[in-house]
Structure formats: structure tokens, C-alpha cells
Image (cartoon, rainbow, N blue to C red; front, side):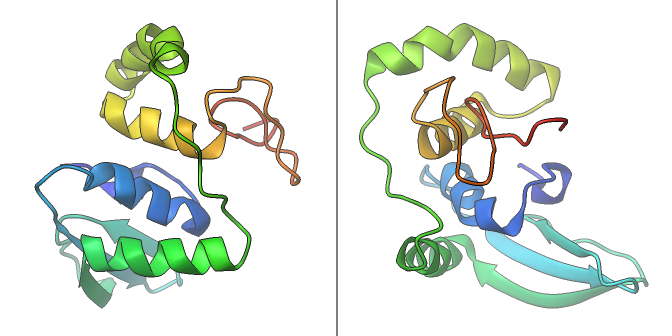
Length: 139
């Protein structure tokens, strides 16, 4: 299982991450918790702790559909085109090594990269995010 709160991704990327996490046949619930300071945690496993309040729990497939529609209609995310095997394979070694290093699924990284940059290492967003993973400079 992937613990989404460990990924440190913004809310805009939640739908993208969820799509990658539940892209297979096994689909989990997503839990949203809020702590006493207002910090939000998204996870695919129930959390315990007196300082965490469960705000909602939804089936991942439903949450993906809801957020995908909202993000696309708001113009915040574009529907990516199909990625060729050549583009994907060109970065497979690097992505696999990075996934192992940070204990992530390579498929998750591939999906994020396909979605946010289309495997274009020179991609720059309107907000200034750069590269395959569309990170902000200094991150």
C-alpha cells in the first residue's frame, strides 16, 4: 500500500496520484484526516491518534472521478496524450532507481511524469514548475 501522506504532494496532484495508485484492479478507500493545527493528511490506510480527526472516507474510484472532472473543467490539469513506449523506456532505469531509493512504486512515478510533463525533461509550467516531475525550483 502507498501511504499518500508521505508523498508530500499538493491537493492538485491528489487525483493524479490516486489514479496511479488505484489504476490496477485493487481499489482502496481514501481517508482524509485533520489534526489540531489544521494540517491535512490523505492516506489509504486508517490512522489512529487522539489528535487526528477523520474528516471523510471515500472509495478511491469515486474520488478520482470527482477530482479529475473538477481539475479538468477548471483548466488546472490537461488531459495528457498517450505516451509512446520509447518516451517511457528512455527514463525507465532512472525512474526504477528513484522509486527504489524512496520506496515508491515505479508505476506511480511513471504516471505522475506522464501526466504532468509527458516525459519532457524541459517542460516548464505557467507557475514555473520544471522538469519531468514539475517541481518548483529549490524544491
